[in-house]
Length: 66
Picture (cartoon, rainbow, N blue to C red):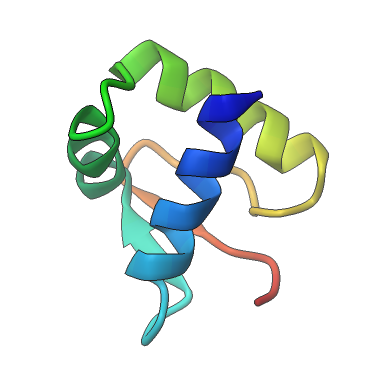
């Protein structure tokens, strides 16, 4: 899905210096692309299934690998 690629790109940008980011930050950044909070959580679920991220927590998201 288009949202998944946008979310992946945002995650790549936000994790250049760290392995985890605030979910709130991701939601804010995704909003700049017209992606709503529910769409972000749905995309995160799909990215977890792909083993792209570790279980998204209410506060932080940790990536599996770069």
